[in-house]
Picture 1 (cartoon, rainbow, N blue to C red):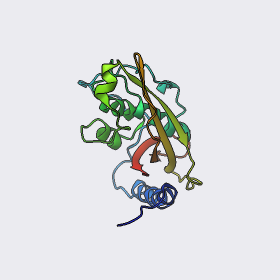
Picture 2 (cartoon, one colour):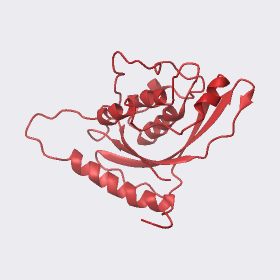
Picture 3 (tube, helix red, strand yellow):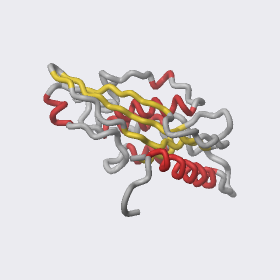
Picture 4 (cartoon, rainbow, N blue to C red):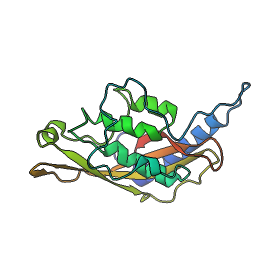
Length: 203
C-alpha cells in the first residue's frame, strides 16, 4: 500500500488474527502417519556451533531454565529479552543473541534464528559498543495494542515491545526506540509447553 502506513494497533488486529488462523489451520492438518511433536518448548543447541552464544551475556536479566513454558506470556517475554541481550565481550555479533533465543522456539523458527539470514533483535552500533566493552540490557512490555486474540488449542499471539539499552566502560548510550513485534506461539496440546513459532514486525 502506498501512502500512510497503518498504525501498530491496526497491524496488530489484522496480522494477529490472520497469523493465528493460518498456523492453527496448519497445525490441525490431517496426517496418515504416526503423530510426532513439531514444537517442543526447548530446542537443544546444535552441536558444533561456531558462535560464542553459549556464554551468558552480562546484562541478561532472566534465567531460561526457570521459565514457565506453559505460560504464553512468560515465553514471549523471555524470548524478547534473549533476542536483545548482546555482550561484545563474548558475542561476535547480534546474531549470537538470536541463537540463544532459539531455545524457546519451534524447530522451524530455531533453524531460521541460527542462520545468517534469519530474524534477529534490534540493530545496535556494534563497533561502537565493542570499543567500550559494551553489552545491553533489555526491557520487554506485553500488550499495549489492544486485546490479544483468543488463545486457540495450539496457537496464541502476543504483542511484544522490546527496548534495548547499550552500556559500556565509561560510556552509556540512550535506549533504542522500542521495537513492537507480533509473537505467535505454538503448542502440541492443551496444557503443554509453548514455543515461539513466528515473529512479525509491527513497525
